[in-house]
Length: 196
Figure 1 (spheres, helix red, strand yellow):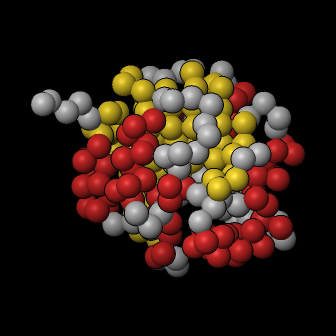
Figure 2 (tube, rainbow, N blue to C red):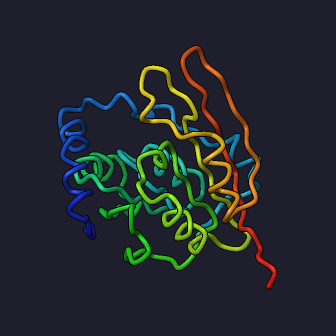
């Protein structure tokens, strides 16, 4: 497992790591299933990159459904759990604030996923520019994010802000689902072709 964390990432990961170490992981996705999203994205196989993979449920699901997967996360404890669950996924410890130089297996990916990670990224524009660089011309970038969460507003991102940021780099389709205390969105993005 390759490692590169900034000092701010190391500080932030203390809390994350403690949660993973104590197995206090309420955000863990036991029923990971991306079938509907993959059908809508029309991406059925290829190289996939799971940004902020945590304990790896989505990475593992993709691996079991025909993708060659790399999972990248800033928490060594999360990756320890993930690697114990599946050996066919390549797990990388790296700071998502600056993953441009991460030693990834591929230059570009047919599928990149960000499942509820983007609200925690400080420099979202920089992060999305790197995602755009790493996404193949026919690939899909999938973002699932809370747009509103009554009990935990810090885990949500403003819908207009997210639409504007994504629109700088991608063309996207958006589906939203409302729950009693939250609003969640699924974005399926393709590369924005810039005419010069």
